[in-house]
Length: 99
Image (cartoon, rainbow, N blue to C red; front, side, top):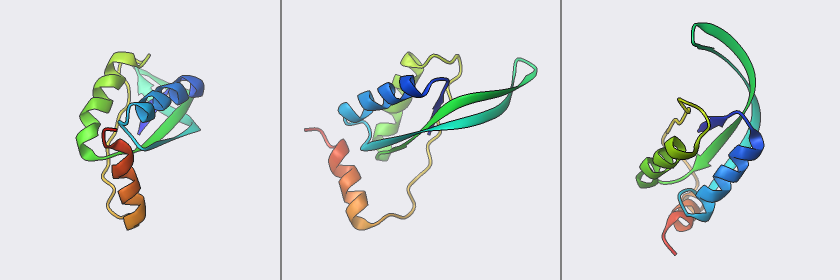
């Protein structure tokens, strides 16, 4: 999962991840984030991308996020896919495999 201040920026970023086979798909949604930063509570509209990938691509996604993201401290969280249909899991693996 990756958050960003702008849905269009995040959609473009995810498009690059999919194009480069770092993830099979990314879903970009508007969200409202309430958080503490620099001693103040903020209530901000943001965007959230949830990605589907394989574990060995996560470090590359984190590295790209660090280098391209507009936030000083971007939120990048990885959680395992515990259950999925065999066909969906196979599709994810196929999409992130080098061409």
